[in-house]
Length: 79
Image 1 (tube, rainbow, N blue to C red):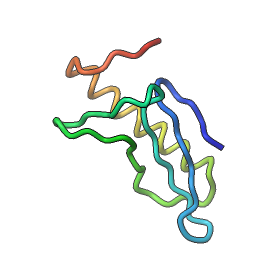
Image 2 (tube, rainbow, N blue to C red):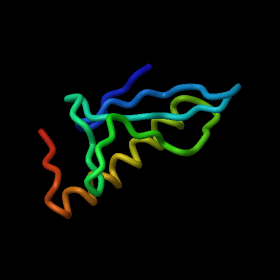
Image 3 (cartoon, helix red, strand yellow):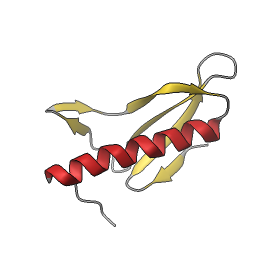
Image 4 (spheres, rainbow, N blue to C red):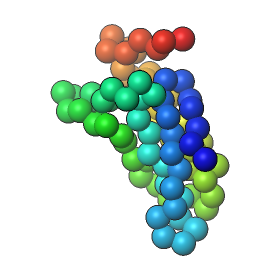
């Protein structure tokens, strides 16, 4: 159940029984660069009881990431 959000793809996954996490990366498959370090995907660090909650957490993480990147001039949404 992958999900597109802004310019990112979110993938929820179960790690342990009933412990849902999510990872996300850019939809254009380019790396996310944070402080000069390139990441192909980023994992959201909390365990959730279902995949929808993990996706919601990833969306919040993307919002925080893009907000700081826009403020620094490093990110422009394709929208």
